[in-house]
Image 1 (cartoon, rainbow, N blue to C red):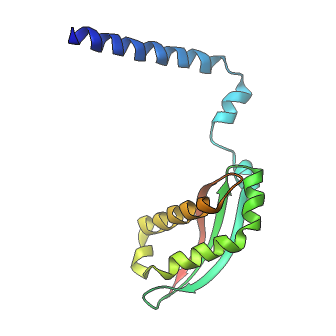
Image 2: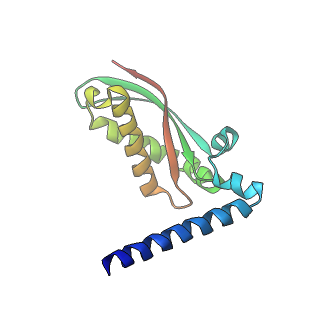
Image 3: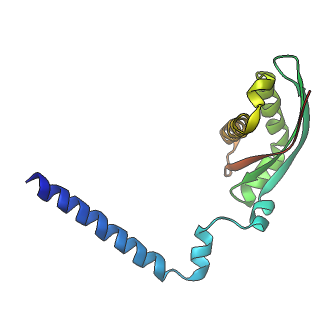
Length: 140
């Protein structure tokens, strides 16, 4: 009885996967492209340069940092351009609660990028922030 339920469940999964592949193969090339990663032109078209920010860290060190923020569309980009001052405030506020060691290495920078993305998305109403890129970074 238990084996037949497992076999039934696996059969359903297999049929669902096969149906999904058939539908995907029948999409025209334009639809397949739309579901793929955006081109670099699309990324640039939906990104906002936040500019350079210089501020003190919690441990009395100093950071000078710049960001490029990618959104999910033109409406979101337009909104983020208007909210640029709020984005800068979020960055300064978050950095003021960090120490230089929090920003060390790849993981430190990725963690900061993710934190800023989450905080900016709390403010966004016309779309969302997809990715935050650190474009320059100096700490002293």
